[in-house]
Length: 503
Image (tube, rainbow, N blue to C red; front, top):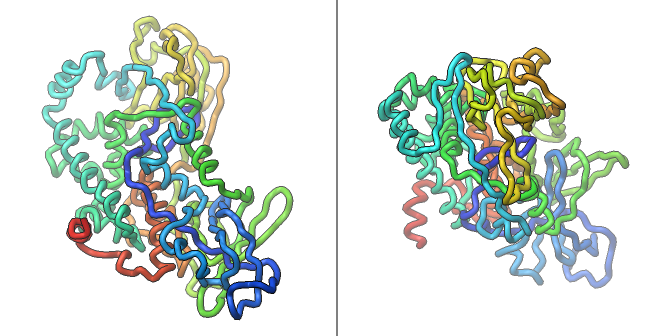
């Protein structure tokens, strides 16, 4: 699965994984006194019934739907709360819901977008090193002719990795969670998975018999198109990227962003549109209590929470990093940086001569990937609208069309002139798409402090929508199990055997 990019495109979303265990976490602040409070000894009455609150830009905190517990105490009148309740309404919960069967697009009023066929090719700056045809057998023959059986060895390697990775859905269906990224990876593939975060894609593929030429021509092109990085990136992140490049991608009508907005509506969450600035640790009856401050265009605000989930990256070069106060030792930020990505949507006439086709009518490709050269762009795609009618057809090569250009830096005017004979408009979006993946030791942890969690820890091992959904569900289960002291469900070894015995 790949993260959505501006301008549409197709992104793979998991649709058949088991549903998460639901939960509701408690808000640790009462409103005003009330004489008929059912909790003896409580001097803060009348808890306001609220839906979970999502904190924009990082901190999410769930709210209870109960009468009057003291902070950290479950109401006696709601025993079902210990078994199931709403998952906190945050980006974490939305992505987790995207990974379950109950979150099918049809359930939130969405429909699958019709696919429009198009051929792909890989360009090395001078020639096309590999061209797709309309015939499947001819494509296989070309791969074999140029690279031998390297493509089969690559597919076998990716399938082996993904088969082990899919174990996480069984573990999560049984309520198991992990405190750190290393523990999660070890449960899936033992030391082999952990080592894949320290060794490169190229090294791992050479070990299983994939040729260097195939890595340079094909593997590098796929990784540049998805991560903007080379085959020197870690093998685990590379395997996730290569798995998403094998087809079976899909999108919904209107754009995949509607999945998140639809799921948010489905949760009936009360969203506070604000930026979290500070999380301060306080203690109440020996348990942590977090004072969260936030600000928006109206002003500033704050509240108290038992559990806080950070759903934004925490790293040194992040200008929006949340400030943590009252923690001893201090909260560590990840020592790393994010990959800048630029998407340019260009409405114009493609310069087919640059790709070796003087006559634009003969240019056959809708998608172009690149090797290490040229360096100023990574991929080029002929875009389709987010709503594809039955009569829609792609523009002819000689016609003006909308092209999506992915590049590491904003395109210069001279570079646009290289790719396009002329153009009407250019719209650009630039953002920090994902971590710069490299060997990292130790791997980040989901638990920053007692009842303070970091969802984004897993993206330093691999970054995609599906991986983020897995991390979201893991944090939800982790918070649930720690709250109810169900420690047998956290960081367990030999889970495959345990899951089989539970069945």
